[in-house]
Every structure is written in structure tokens, then in C-alpha cells.
Length: 248
Image (cartoon, rainbow, N blue to C red):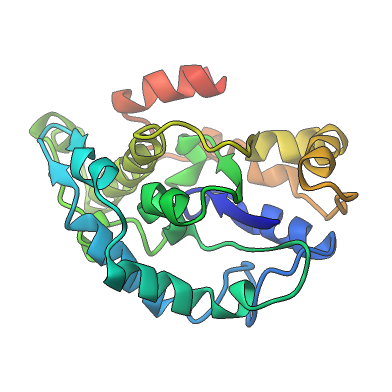
């Protein structure tokens, strides 16, 4: 079984990567401390190829119709296969990878690996945007977007503008996931549930991957950090997703 994790950077995806590794899933090599498969450059390049097929409509809306209608380009497939070389060439029965940028190319990953197992991972956006990640500015990966004036008017500092960019990145990655039907084999987790209800979540994961899932240390102080944050950490375009995910 091939397994991958779909989740934005700084959403706690290292926890699921470390859990999978500790459970005996081969996650490629080498890995960094976050459990990301390295080196990442070919995945980054694949993101930029993919982004050429996404049209920005404006006001935080993107058109994914060309992505959905198109097969992954030969260049994209080569980049992904080269990035995943250690995983795809492994003879391990259970193998996979985690790097947050996978989410930026998710629809074409599903086209390349329709029979893979997909673990969807989310975190409260109010916590997720407090710290930086490489995907904070989507334009670094070729994704077109704008900073709508009605949100810019809420920003009182450069840090607030950075938070807005992170928030748009969080929202875009939710949009890209819902742009296509869920894969045949998939499961969803909230970071917060893995922190406070780990045993039950590991039971779900065990059934999903077919082997006992290992328990790792989870820090309760990583949840709800926004409550003591004095900066901008909420935007109204979060609302529908937060209701769907049970955060409000």
C-alpha cells in the first residue's frame, strides 16, 4: 500500500509522519525532523508546473477545471517520480511520504496514484497561521492570488499582512482538496483530536493502514495558542470550513 499525507504546512503533519514511521511504514529517505521526504526541490518544481493549470478568478476564487480536465504532464510525472524514487522503488508492503507541498498538487497526485491511501490532516486555521511555513506565500509556487482590499484594511502591520497571506494559503489548500471527489481510500484527522483523543484516532488509523499504529508523544500546549495571541489570526473566509470541521 502506498500512503500519502495531505495537509498544509504547520498543521502538525509531522505528528502523522512520525506515527506512520514508528508504526513500520517506510516513509522514504532521507527525512528531516518534520518527517518530510528530502530533497524537496523536485516536488517544489512540480508545484510550479501544476500551478500553470490553475486560473485565479479573483476575490479568493480559483478555477481548477483545466487541472481536472488534464492529465499530469510528462514533466510533472517525471519530477514526482524522481522525488519519490526511494519510496516507489522500495519493496516494503507499506510505504509512503509526507511533505506539505503535496497538497499543492493534490489533484494530479490522485491521477498518478488513484489506488493510494490518502490521509487528510487539518488544524484550526487560527493556530495554523501563527507561525511561518514555506507555503505562506503561494506565489512562491506559481499560484496566482491577490490580497483583497477588505482584508488588507484589517491589517495594521507587516506581520498582519503575512498572516493574511498564510490564511489565504490555508484556504487555497482547502479549495484544492475539494476541487475533486475524495479518493477511494481516504481518511481524515484533525490535529486536535490526535492530541486529546489519541487512542481512538490511532484505532481508526490502525484499521485504515492494516497494522497497529504506534503512539507518539503529543503536546497539549500546541492547541489553542491563538487564544493568547494579540495579532490578527481570524478572517471571515475561514468560517464555512471551520463550521464544517467543527472548530466553531
